[in-house]
Amino acid sequence: MAEVPEVEILVRDLREAVVGRAIIGANVLRQEAVRFPPASEFPLLFCDRSVAGAGRRAKYILMPLSGGLTLAVHLMLWGTLKLVPSDQAPAPETLIVWQLDRGEDLRLLDKLGYARAAVAPHEILAERLDLNSLGPEALDPSFNADVLARQLRRRRGALKSVLLNQRALAGLGNRDADESLWLAGIDPRRSAASLSHDELERLQTAIVKVLTEGIALRGTQRDLFGRKGQAPHGRYVFERTDKPCPRCATAIAHLRIGGRNTHFCPQCQF
DNA sequence: CGCTACCTGGGT
DNA sequence: ACCCAGGTAGCG
Image 1 (cartoon, rainbow, N blue to C red):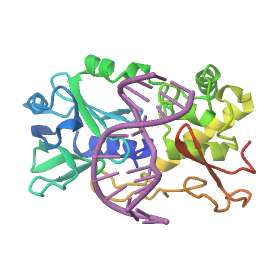
Image 2: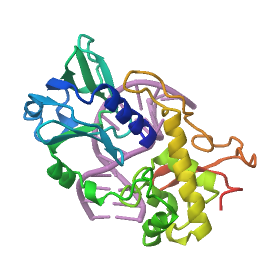
Image 3: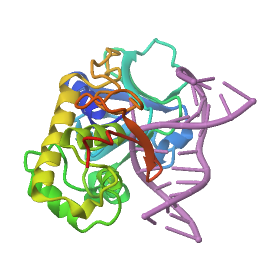
């Protein structure tokens, strides 16, 4: 559920509605949702803090707080953030609640329970989450075919798997990888190091287009305020197995690459 | 690298 | 009654 467009929408909503506000307290409903510090110490770190900013690195949501700490949230597969009135009873899948000023809560929810939060001084956070090992951001203005070439050239393995590796390139999830490869007309089973210059150009353009359009449509999920995004769940190939390819009408194929569902057109991706 | 575990709701 | 999931860490 949560790929980069969905995460980015939440970050933008946080900037609009949460940044600058005071945190009155935090309540951990599910201890395992706190990566660090120990869940018992977690709420104390939010005393007398306010939210100073909101950003994203790969699929991590990063919220600097006043006083030098940074809160990191990872939504994993099905996590989400919601801004709701504090008097609203928490849904059963609520993991963590941050009580804000003006009678509102920021809540981390996840029916699967995989989503995680962590808070620490920024340097320690970066170290423990290994943020400095992440690859270049696909949505950074400096991302281009040369950057992509450098990241793919030295890695072994299937192109699809390398594109999902956030240390190679930060920004693609399973859906967006499949859609990007279809747009570029490249077979996901190809070796990552084998792309020609022209293919690298096409793939880089496709990645930026897929992510940018996903964001323009506000993702596939509900935003911070509960409004549904307009991006289609399956656009070109994702979860469209046996349906016609939008380009050549051949039946979309499905297989597993690196343990992940992969959808592609066997006719026009090579 | 390839595999498993994590864990619950929704789809088949 | 089964599966299975758009992510990641951790294992061999």
